[in-house]
Picture 1 (tube, protein in one colour):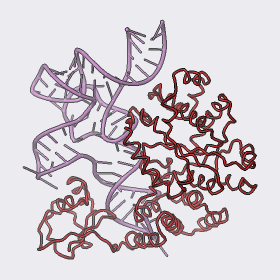
Picture 2 (cartoon, helix red, strand yellow):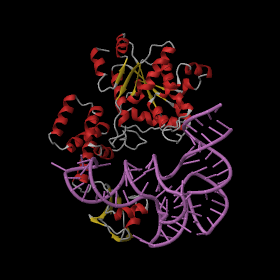
Picture 3 (spheres, helix red, strand yellow):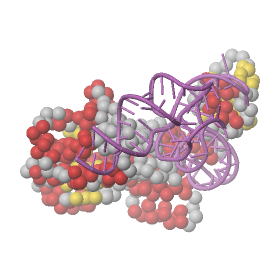
Picture 4 (cartoon, helix red, strand yellow):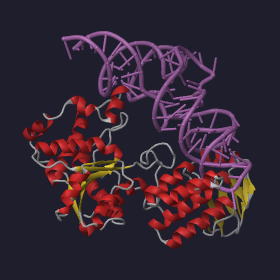
Amino acid sequence: MTKEDCNAIQKNTVDFIGLEELCKKAELGKPLRIKYGADPSAPDLHLGHYVPIYKLKQFQDMGHTIVFIIGDFTASIGDPTGRSKVRKALSHEQIKENAKTYFEQVGKVLDLNQTEIRYNSEWSSVLTMDELLKMMAHFTLSQILERDDFTKRFASQTPIFMHEFMYPLMQAYDSVAIQADLELGGSDQLFNFLLARELQIFYGQKPQSILTMPLLVGTDGVDKMSKSLGNYVGLTEDSIQMFGKLMSIPDPLIIPYHKLILQSSEETLENIRVQIEQGHNPMDFKLDLATRITEKFHTFQEGQNAKEHFITVHRKKELPDDIPEFELENVLSVKIYEFITTHDLTPTKSEAKRIITGGGCSINGEKITDPLAEVQLQKGDIIKVGKRKFLKIV
RNA sequence: GGACAGGUACCCAAGUGGUCAACGGGAGCAGACUGUAAAUCUGUUGACAGCGUCUUCGGAGGUUCGAAUCCUUCCCUGUCCA
């Protein structure tokens, strides 16, 4: 690893612990073992995952070994995070299935042939009580309780279960098992990563270095991107959807997305900042951002198409090219709310009535506001429900 | 084991016998506006056979003309004591 490499990998990181040792180790010429842990309960990867995975890619390109750990052991126990809801324990079949889709998605970024894939049940499920207790004897309750989410839950009097205390420890043990030189992940993982260092020392290993990446803020502009909060942009979402979601991010997120997803240079970022400050419409930068990100995960053409689609539908309020169609022989007289529900434009009839009453439904551009209206539908009619649902009668 | 507090819709949270399909906030959805699915403002948010019916306030029973609200019992969570 060269000096430049050493600098390059620091780009966009939050914490970097043990950088010097790492670079020294790398100079010996042996590939570094870089650990990345994944939870197989949520196989939908989103842009938030992309940030650290891209960093892994950088390491991989330098010839280091990525050790991808599937946390099947902990997943099969179940993890009651958040409120009183107990996250379901997953069966082995489910885990295998999830892991498979996981890798299909990761494979878009990383070269999986050059990646070491391990399941942590391999070593965790055979741990003896004896061994476990020895490990536990090295940490105190207050040490574990220091972890941010535990602190919060404790303060808000929400339950923390005993086995949850063990998760950080089990994660740390993964580092021991694979002899990690470096662990990489989101900045919320710092605590767990530090624990691993201690445990490695206990097992006579050199402690791993730590590199954490910023957490990408979700489309709501408030919380970190996560599937459960529904503020995510999935890596495998179709281009139209992806584009739309990216346009829905609040304007202040343009810079962070540029930086973390597109790896834009400081000059580019500064340029955008200045232009927005001078009154340039942020929308233009957002269009550009959305186009480029969509291109990145799809094709250039799809990115362009998605942009076109967005402009016609949302800016010009015109009809898109590809409207779902419904074949109709003769003129049909129906209650509008029933029709749009049976054709999946609304989930329930009550919802349909609500949208109609609110002025969200139109036929050929004419608003229908009477929820009980009976309408004559014929070939060529175009029904619009809400902002982006269309149906064409053919 | 004991004492106390609590479990309400997607989330937070009010409500302690009828006016409760349930205040308020968040989030979602829709409308207006805007060269954005940004921001802001407004409306809306159980389902269905449209005004009435059915399901919903941790579960199961009960009291009552009537229960989220009272009683019994069970389950779950927190705090303190042991």
